[in-house]
Length: 548
Picture 1 (tube, one colour):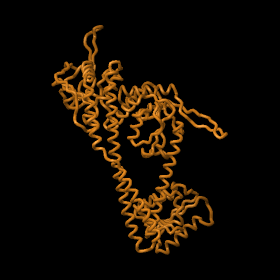
Picture 2: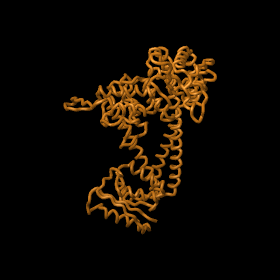
Picture 3: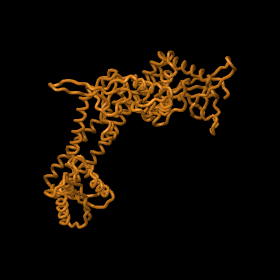
Picture 4: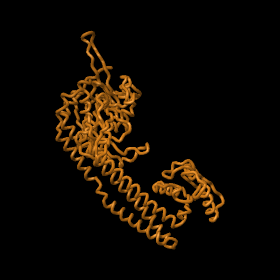
């Protein structure tokens, strides 16, 4: 058997628990159990508050390479003073089949009592994690009530303002966000430009060519554009936004009142943490983006992240990115043409299949842009909204029927088994060294596996439930957009018409041979929810073919 000896001391000293004394005691212990081959790892001048130490890191790398069978140290706190770090180490060593021995505490994972100590350590580690998490969350909630800015990189559109106040006779101060009028105008431009071109790259390119820079003078990259579009600091808080965050398993605090949100706990030590630990709080700064627009943009950005950006966009064509070829499924892109001379020259645009002149040789006819756009808008306006809403309600009811029941029963079963484990650990500590101890350990391991399985099952139930709730929220948003469509579309700009269309319509197909337009609405045609197809057929409607 080959053994690794680990020793650590915060300050250099030749007395007491010096590095040399620790190593000698560990060697003596190893020789008593028949070990003659040792690897020694020494960290002198390093604290035990964390495991960021050079020799400790090297020892873990050697452990993964199976260069030794067991680690011996003089005392547990030589490894770490953090219970969670220590428990994590034990788990890692166990998975590698490497034992761990602490001389002072007689902690030996190769014995029943040692394994019992491992379980006890895990209980303390879990308690520490939960206590810290709850304490941090409580602190964040208190800070969020005042909309306090905790520091870091300031978002585009805002500056930091220091607020001074007197409490208990002492002067205190905290930071809040203050609108930077020049920058907030740029943020609005970025949102509007994205609604026009529907491309992160094109927005970034537009800003670069226009000589527009970020807060610190750098180029605004596509990823930075995405961060701005998805940052809740800019959206006006509302019930829809609250529900959207909650269904994405994000903790939300504060009353929705039109102010923006501040985010807490998204990163820890430079790394993004699980969403369940995030906190979104309604702040005191005013939001600048309407909730429905912001949610529509989240849908577009999310869809592009998964499937790529929609092809085609233009300052003229309101169907860019929505109109598809019925023959091959490609996007119908805008092409411009003109006829006549001088003052009589007339410019027009039409949609053609993107793959018409490629190797696919699609034969679908081109279609006049203004005519098909006018026709589509008129058809949507005269469509019986009550029929559509009725269909949405049917889909919503079907979701309710498949929504899993509460996982309360699973949670109760988990708590019951965890209590049983705690009792068995107590029994094990009282019967250490007896023949019954190995049976108790087997039972503890069996119950632990069952608890893990139940937790996985509970996560699956929660995931399905949240997914269903999110889809039902999407349906509510679509219905709200349908109700707004007729009131707003006539007076809307080109960009606004694009937004209104995309908020209710997933895609429109054009078949030039049949003269058929089919309008597919969100949520019922399978684009989001996997339901049956519901579309508006307009047989007999044929646009004139325009030669390229």
